[in-house]
Length: 68
Image (cartoon, rainbow, N blue to C red; front, side):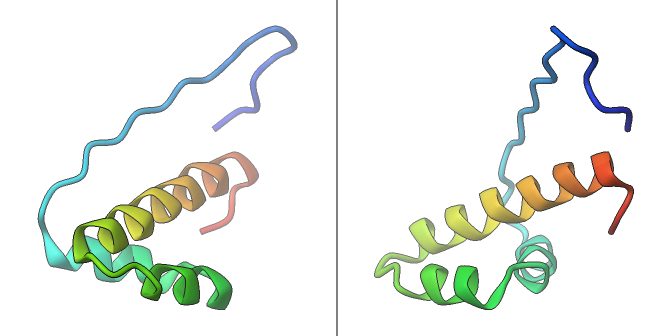
């Protein structure tokens, strides 16, 4: 993925699906501090939302720097 040109903006969207394997994969790429923060959520839906959003963000950013 090429970096945006000057004046160009890339907009990404992601829709969460209730598949456990995806969440496990996203959780694997989180930093220790992100995992700790995720485990602080009382309600599972909030924890899953946090893991999903941070995992997707890491995935998107890694595509710009060509790292997995």
